[in-house]
Length: 268
Image (cartoon, rainbow, N blue to C red):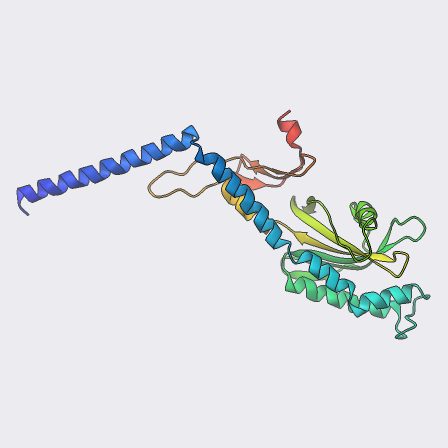
């Protein structure tokens, strides 16, 4: 290769490298300075999270309404109101419960994000929670039937709010934290009352929202174009209407985690 050719090639490589370095530095300076596009990107993130939550939970209402019309639910109501035997079909309440349990198992198997499917009886005298007539739980792709499961802490409030709705309407609860092993996960409950006249019970489907918050967790470690260095983990918070954390950053591991607390305690 002639000397002039080598010299020209070296000059071109030097120019390309210089442009790349200055581009990276300018990008970093503008990024750190917080140019106007930050607000737009944050608004887009909020909209994206809201859209994904809406899409993830879109099937909850139709599913609980469909379960409400299942023959097993109607049979349980009739049998419960007539001493334990359905006068129409001649089937006991226990047989109907077995059939509804099978329906719940199929529902959970078809929806891996669904965490729980239940039928809770309602005390006729004070409309408080009675006991779980059907309780099927799903975790790690496995489903198990819980016998004589104790009422959950949120059940009383869930019943009272659901009974305020018109017949056939579906109540959607607020996002809550639920214990899962050593940590917690965000979940949402949907419920609808069943019964002829007086409320007999309540169907509840619980959905795991861990995957629905994937965009939020990803925002804590944003992707960077080559050859820029990775940015430090960002602090991304999701709180409910009371200020309770649904997702918050764990600065020790640099990812979004779930831990009980309130935004007001950290930012008075």
